[in-house]
Image (cartoon, rainbow, N blue to C red):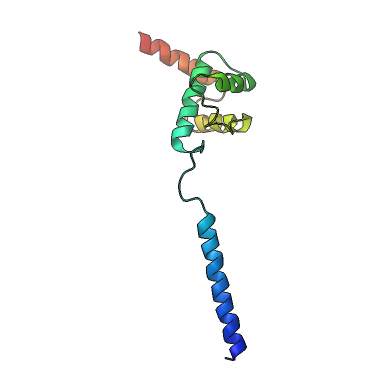
Length: 119
């Protein structure tokens, strides 16, 4: 190998190492304080959703508005909450409970569950 080839090889290895370090340095390695997609935040949003559905909000738009107005809803933590996130929560529920096909099914299930627990 000539001196130029060795120099190019060293420069390539140094550039590769530097690029790897930059990727590592800028990758988030701890959970963000406002992460609303983790398991706890998702569970908290689902509980709010169930309370609002139980109170009678059966349309997605009304459900979204009522969830944002709910006393347990932290607007700073869930600042990214929108219609798409609500649809994700509903789809997650429908996957967990395949016998539910709509918000009305969830509402009826919650009413039946509440009536059976009060007896």
